[in-house]
Image (cartoon, rainbow, N blue to C red; front, side, top):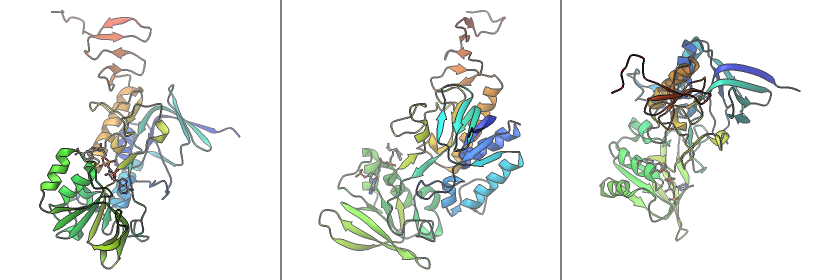
Length: 367
Ligand code: NDP
């Protein structure tokens, strides 16, 4: 059976703050975006709406003076994108071909042809997979267990409490340091006796009087109840194999993130951790017409508001590109949908047939 072919000017992958903001902007620009997102799958960690769907209170998203629940916030984003005509398709993308425009996205029963593609497929926090870690009601996730200190650390449930951070990298040091603003004490539990974190981050954590360390230790289970929240963790000393219970009132898992970029391997430029490369001045990737925004291209800020901001930027870039205007590429040169290439110094235009012409406005006399 042949596949149904859909043709769209803008296709967006991902329905977190970045993807939905890109949808709001491109829909308002009459570009009729198609937003494709993956169905819920706990094993693959996919949730339409993204990481905010597994958060409770969001207190730092501007515009909500009393705070808002993560899922509620994403529902508002989605309704706003729908209001301007965004089309939604919940399905798995099996293959993507970015070799020529229109780009082709294959699903089980469709081939989607996209003139521009905005990738907002996000990143997933890595989890340990231990009992007690899953989201409520299966575990205590969102109820004393978190993978984001900036998001959840200031919540009343964690204030003046003894908290545990699991991990030994920069994220763990950053989270532990941040949490000391609110917590009574923070214990970092790490599986080895040396940290992976950079020296400066280690030094800051070692000097912080509120942080202590449990070395060579694995966390095997998070303990607690819905009534009491987290009450402790079951730990195992990996040198002695001794198990014990360590009392605490909150757990932050900080063992890294994984960008959702599997589908783009070999086609788009990525850094050594697999995050898509954009240049910071625009959201363009190395392929003209493909833009990336949100956590899939940012392992540093990782906030809903920064994701939404870059979603807006990617949408404006796609609009410019479809309007035949130049878009800045990662190397600083500019490119148009017709294939004109403007050199990074803005001096020359290399036409699609190879002819080189001046980019200076007529009437400007060269010095
Ligand atoms: P990393 O991969 O650097 O560190 C992950 C840590 O978690 C390691 O200590 C690792 O232990 C531990 N870990 C991994 N899996 C498990 C497991 N199953 N059980 C127990 N422990 C586990 O990730 P980060 O998120 O910390 O950093 C990612 C990148 O982002 C780095 O390049 C970092 O420099 C950068 N970053 C920079 C920041 C900054 O400069 N402000 C802030 C945050 C991140 P082990 O060491 O034994 O492998």
